[in-house]
Length: 369
Image (tube, helix red, strand yellow):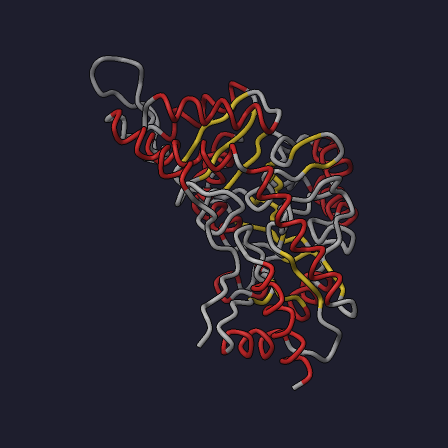
């Protein structure tokens, strides 16, 4: 059998190896040290944000973003339904209840019209949610030009889930730079990785609060004293060194993924592709297509996996997940159609042209069968 082609494998090499050895040899391997400080500063500069704290995961960053925004047990938080489960799980970790919101067709992200109508109704009844979390899907930014002023108008904090979108831009601004705080993920399948990790971006006071909670809420005294419940959410200096090497090569990774998306669009012209309605530069983390109606993503992905080519259906909406049965859903038709027709194709920046040809040929073959 031919070598397996993964959906989005890590793209690492000598710079990453050298960075890890440098950090290892320094003996700074705990969640503190010069590599961690430098990584946070470089991420803030890259995204154009005031401050950054590097964390153990994107989920940890979302959890802290909610707590920092004042979300309390029993609150409601509006969450985009068409997303990976971590977005909604973080709300539950904070003790709140997610209310799911449909997407629009221009961005596949949270629908501003639905959000405005929902908040208007909730304002009239005196039951506004505590926060709103749009998600930048597959490198496509949400419509922040509309979402941000809507949330500001109702006095509700917006948390930008940019876990899939580092390097993408909406206008002149970077993904993760919108709202009260922005969240990034450096999981192994993301466009850059720290093996596992994430970050929270925002104003200095926002980041300082998150950093405090992430470090077991330890008071700045010689003995161990705590006035808040804290968490062990900090990224290690060792993994921050890996992140610095990855960040230095990020622009090349984005360029390669853009080339991959262009290749698929040329080779497979009868398929619809993810739109980028509010995105001036998508990072193309994953190339996602919509199959013609009548073609089943599950069947096609299973057949491609039998060819040793990893392909996956688009995200299953949260309101269709068994764990969230009975939760409120606003709209639903768009996200349900995206799930019913969407598949993700291999998009890793280390893929060769020959591997891309194999993917395109494989997809054509299974669609004909």
